[in-house]
Image (cartoon, rainbow, N blue to C red; front, side, top):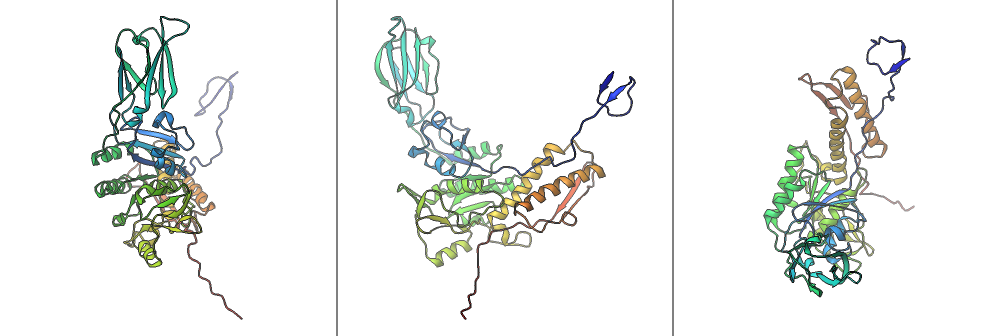
Amino acid sequence: MAGGNFTTQNKVRPGVYVNFKSAPGALGALGERGVVSLPMSLSWGQPKSILTIEAGEDTMDKLGYPITHPSLLLVREALKRAKTLLLYRLNTGTKAVVTSGNLTATAKWGGVRGNDLSIVIQTNVDDEDKFDVKTLLSGDEVDSQTVADISELVANDWIDWSGTGSLATTAGAPLVGGADGTVTNQDYLDYLAAVEIHDVNTIALPTTDNTAKAAFVSFCKRLRDDEGKKIQVVLENYPSADYEGVISVKNGVILDDGTTLTAAQATAWVAGATAGAQVNESLTYAAYDGAVDVATRYTNSQIIAALQAGEFVFTPNNGRAIVEQDINTLTTFTPDKGKSFSKNRVIRVLDGINNDFIRIFSEFYLGKVPNNDDGRNLLKGECVNYLNTLQGIAAIQNFDSQTDITVAAGNDVDAVVIDVAVQPVDSIEKIYMTVTVQ
């Protein structure tokens, strides 16, 4: 008996032709948040490239140090609330090197971490014609190879080998000359070019350089306004940006181990926390993880002035450092962008709608669904389902699928026009109470 699927009723052979399909349902879902990016000067790691660091990941192989090392302070802060860090090493540095006999050992990456490397060459106890070549990092063995001569050595995660001929034993030959080098504004521009092709929620700039800040603001505006790629940039003390895509951190915090973070360093946590916050979550009065105080305290009138200027301020609260208000730098309000656009929870909702709609439409609709009544109704149903999901988690409110969304044919045969009205939900931040004493 013949069988199989059918498109039209045109089969010749007798048989049973069966099509299987799923019931209509939503194809897209809320996109995940939690991706933060950070440019840093480092002492180890591949330079001029994006390194993906997941929360909880062992950083030794990629960054040369455990996550607890002081040089990775900002990495720790960013990952306290973000799930993924796209880290960019700004500096190339100078590679440490040592020559022992005919063998030259060169650190895989530039930076002072290479100075912690050394090599030990010993005669193999089982075969006196071979040598054990060991790579040590701060005295701990990280690689060992048994070879007859230099040509058999294979590069490891720490050292590249060069030279020809036979090996000579050495009790220990430390690599020297490794240096981190300096960072220029061009390095930050190179970072922006590299990160642009990645999907991120937030970017932190942990520097006080105003030229770099201006470049990051321009970058953010171009991506948000011209390309529809909704990100936020976190800078220190730059409220003049006056833009919903820019968060300006005014002060730093003091951690429970006594470490004091400047406002520039605190941008890493703010960016990570902002990236990790869901569309129905505000950071207002959120405690900075592991902080016991703020680095600079302000009076009530100074805090009010900072908030009015669009600054993200930490204030002390019962042995903690908390976010006074989860706001961005937008302070010039217009009919198109009212005061609600200055609240980061609202921006997360609007950015989420933008980014998720682009993703859903690109994956499931563009070039795949006919531009007729049936196709547009299917598209409208997808939008309604998504917005109802947002309403179900209190990210938006008062959405009416009958009146708040239309999907119509555009001017071109392949165009569709969607009009949506949404009301983002903000968090309760002010409670006015009157108590009457009888």
